[in-house]
Image (cartoon, rainbow over all chains, first blue to last red; front, side):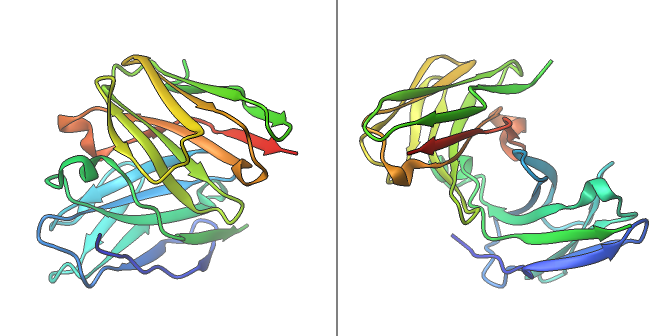
Length: 114
Length: 114
């Protein structure tokens, strides 16, 4: 599986934008980039995914580098509720049974300062 | 209504006992999963069932046996519990096809083996 590298931790002030980076230099052409987050004492929660183009949804935006070797999850205005561990995950939908599983790394622990 | 529910939320038991964790999803999904999150917070897939058929079975001791009586339920039975089984167990579900992207996780079951 292609690996991802994320900073262990980041801090942000409340109501400021947050840019969470992810490096995936060995990404294959069919890997999608997924982001999940895990709030304290909860199960992981889907945030967003993309392949090549930037993506927006109600939770966040995903900016994907042109060479796809890195991506950035953007939270436009961090709130205290956004304090969580954010996971960047690659998944190939064409990899048979493997396409079903999410391989979680260590993620980035985001702290939001009031 | 809770989309993915697990019972019990907490489970404290002694070594050598046999216990079960239940999972139910009311999303109409056809794929369900069990993940384990250890004390170091690493999340790792254990099993996945698609339409009641086992499709992922990671390197998990035979003491762990998943059972899927129907597409809405995936239970996890653990025999001869060991100290190392202490962890948080998350159930998840997704829908193949359009739903391959998003897995919905339950709140977790914290298992403590003493």
